[in-house]
Length: 327
Image (tube, rainbow, N blue to C red; front, top):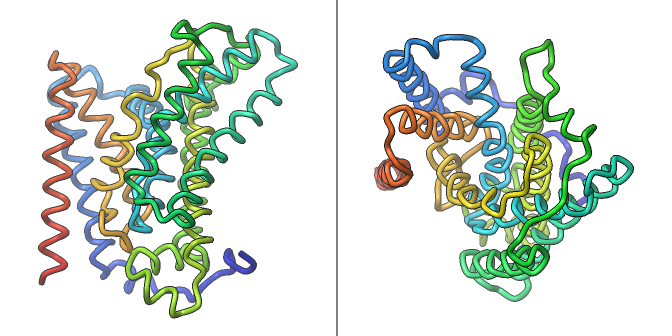
């Protein structure tokens, strides 16, 4: 792993903007702006800065989680257990903290460790046992669901320490939630890592052609294990941030996050086949998914509407990417 975070050769801005991925990302942001304008037309009362900040807050959890999913998909894989990591860490955080502020640090570190271990387990199964990512992460999802059901016995318990909940209520400059700040910082960090470091370059190489990357001297297994471990870590961190803003335990907290994170990554321009993608597009993808959810709620359309639109979006993006590859 030594030297993986060393800077790689810089590209000129004009070279970056001419790449197909950059053009796609630009289109995603245009799409988000169009959706935002539509939402303002439908609900004129939402044309306020506070409403936009609320959208950022609603998108922040998905945005942070989708960073890990983006890296996984870029290697040619998929992670179906991120939502269950969110739920497991959530019930452990509240259950073990149980109102005691002295336990906050220890419980949070334990949660991060649980998420990382789940990701490591996925990475080892995929690289060493040669289990397909879909099968491996689906089985891990079932295991994690079983663990949090055993822990809670179907009846979640525990309370958050008040000082921990205060973090969820805190607003920077009296307006911006901490979750939004965390999302911005993590997005900037992983945009840099994926674009400007050897590690990021190798993630792209593995997804583009795993055989060629091996012949080039890349330790594919190490990179894949690191990517899945990071995805698990980010899922655990997301869970802790989401938990700060909750007053009760929920066994459904992570229910939609696995599929939503895939949607955010793919809509944001990350190709299912791997090799092409980035967090900069996923940011817009997360905003689009949450904005669609908000619009459907305003129109009193049930969850099936969201699932239908997400399916159409993913199919459209995948079909468009397939045409690009053939031309």
